[in-house]
Length: 148
Image 1: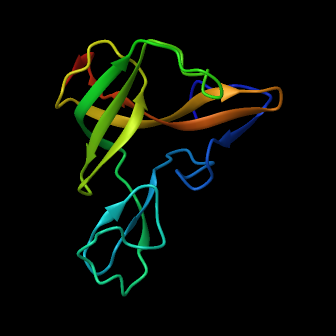
Image 2: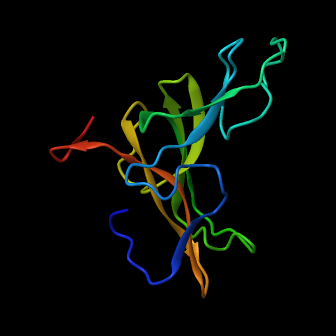
């Protein structure tokens, strides 16, 4: 993982959200083999109410890139136990090719545009005396300094 250097142990904030450790981590989801419904985080049951639920969903890895469907800029700090969320910060809804829209913190709040390409990034959320806690973020994809 580029940009993170620490003598502390780097661990996911929640086990099973994304591949870790990995040079090219991806979010872990599930897909129902009957109806095709995709769920994130992964689930052992299909959440589609129209499905017969007669089969166990299979684990899949989600695409690393998607489209910014919507976003909000939070202009306030959260209180304990989430005080590591310092304002301002952005939360985005990212539409992925698998047909699912997921919510994620964005790496920045400036220059965001609905429809822009976004890429998964695993990064530090917060740390304590022993560990650096990692989570998934999305960041704008930049090609030659221009965002698409």
